[in-house]
Amino acid sequence: MNLPPVLVIARLTIQESSRRRLLLALLVLTLLVVGFSAWGFNKITTITRSDGTPLPPDQVAFITSQLLIVVVFMFSGVLALSAAVVAGPLISSEVESGLLLSMLARPVRRSEIVIGKWLGLGVLVAIYAAVAGSLELAAVDWATGYLPPHPVQLLTYVGVEGLILLSLGLLLSTRLSGITAGVIALVAWLVGWIAGVVGDIGTGLQNEALANVGVISHMVLPSDGLWRGAIYAMEPETFIAALRALGTAGRASPFAATDPPPTSFLLWVAVWFAIVLSLSVLSFRRREI
Amino acid sequence: MADAEVADREEAAVSEEEAAAGTPAVRTVDLTKRFGHTVALAGLSMTVPRGEVFGFLGPNGAGKTTAVKLLLGLLTPTSGQGWLLGEPLGDLGARRRIGYLPELFRYQQWLSASEVLALHCELAPLPRASWKDEIRTVLETVGLTDRANDRVGTFSKGMQQRLGLGAALLGEPELVFLDEPTSALDPVGRHDVREIIRGLASRGTAVFLNSHLLSEVEQVCDRVAVVDHGRVIASGTMDDLLSGTAVRVRVAGLSQADKNKLASYGRIDDEGDQLTFASLDAERVPELVAAIVSMGGRVYEVAPRHQTLEDRFLQLLEDEEK
Image (cartoon, rainbow over the protein chains, first blue to last red):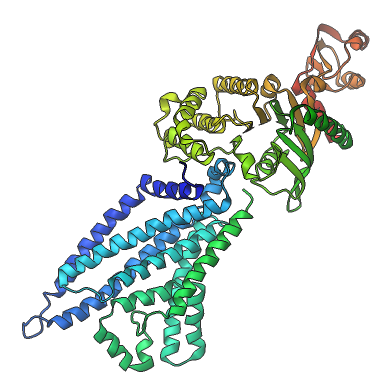
């Protein structure tokens, strides 16, 4: 029994990442980072106060939670950027090199190429987010005894943020060269994050125009909105309560969240994926090879 | 040849062959492709019968690759229609029955030769049980058996082209498109490709051969079409096209003015002491020799021969320029 073409293309994409040693490189780098951060987090437990007594456990937990947010921000950034850089040339480079010519002369639909590549790379992004994220959380737990309150949601938000950048890179890849598509996706991620920060400042200052920048940017590119979900999943209850007590000012930080992402936003993320994938298929279908 | 005449001949050919052998392998009516203001293909109307080797000739940039890509559905025609094996262009069912070696051939560098072929078996799609035999057979045909398990990334250009040819042969297709199939091959490889094409023809596979290598086309094709600036300027069987005689004359003592006076004997390929009259009735040879002698020319050799495709091709392109 032959696999349907969409799964053949997905398998080929995964096989390519493996044969080109992308997976090996990621594994080695991840183990290095996890090991290094375990050592760093362990140092927090050795901090002493001026009178020589160790920090009380709730303070260790607070410092760990804040440091973890910064580490996960770096991790989600690296994941998102890697997804964008790998997705950028996913289609364009194969069109330019001629690799797709002989494959498209087979009974394969253009949509099967696009969706197959998305699936293949999507599986890699999801597995990488789950495995590397779990390793990091386990290392932090081992080093400090701290686990964020919602680890599964945290990894889901980070993984989906990677998928967002992958989808954007793939859409651009149907028309633009690999470098251009990758760079645009990368800049879009940064601009999305900054627009989110601007939105926070708007909320803090109760300036509606600035606050709308955040809302609109979360619609156009939901990566920052998902990152806020990841932050919320990492914050201890006491910290969230303290932020809420600050009122609107408590919402004005790019590394803090007082509320989980609303359901309407999560639904929008699903719609966003459907729109971007449909546009990718349409765009590639109309492309002359 | 006038367009209308080409079209008339094509129409006549279509009806005859359709009656004889069902739907043709390829048929196009007024197939046109424009890229912005550039006309890449201007109203291509032609028929390739089943089981024939069809040569599609033309200088670089004439529109040959554009035509193949239109036929395979890789490009969308600006206007006109076409059918492959009786199905409209772009039909997925027809693509199960064809093979294609692109001009720009490139295969997954990180796979081995047999893995690339297995991928094409899977996409073709061929029954899984037949893959092993299919792959072994085509590797043998294209001479890559001993490199079956090596990564494509380690292959020379010529070997990659052989691999592409192998992929195009998988599953005994009814129609094979070969776009400049020997561009990266050495003389031995070129000879092998001619043998492969003859083998395909003998088992009834139609071959659409894009080439500017005229001697190659001349040796294997039953029928050719010559395309220039996106238009077919001549088409027909080899015999139709090459009915004339070419005459090579080795001569000394003629000035350029004398040579110009000989233009009434048709197009001359002037290579100094050697003049080739591309299309000259054999009956006029004595008359030509007398004319040269009367101008004071000293004739050393007169060699009438069948017109080659190159003679005819250059003549067609020159007529077209006028």
